[in-house]
Amino acid sequence: MSGSAHGGDDTARTERAVMMRKYLSTIAADRVAAHNGGTFDFIQLRVVTLPVAAHGPAVGDRPPTPVESRLLPWWKVTRHAQ
Image (cartoon, rainbow, N blue to C red; front, side, top):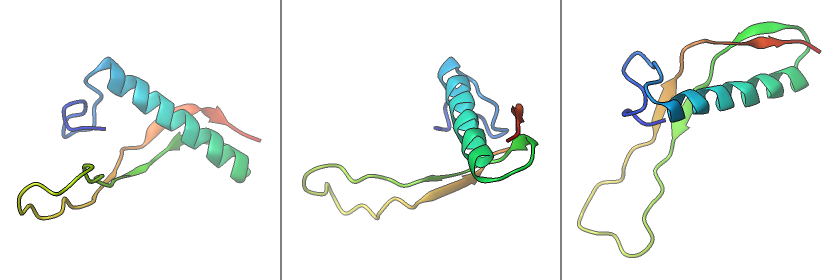
């Protein structure tokens, strides 16, 4: 999720960002529900962004782009239970 789609407060600012937030939270909630018992109403994700090198020879003498890690806020999800 790029900085243009989310502000510093992690508020989704575009329709695509809202869709991705819902998509990620639904997948995460379904996976947690499948592996852990009990109920939950909120889920929190950590996103790690790993840059992918362009195909072909490197251009210039650029240092490698660092991995970015972000802890997203707690998201309310539809109640999940097994």
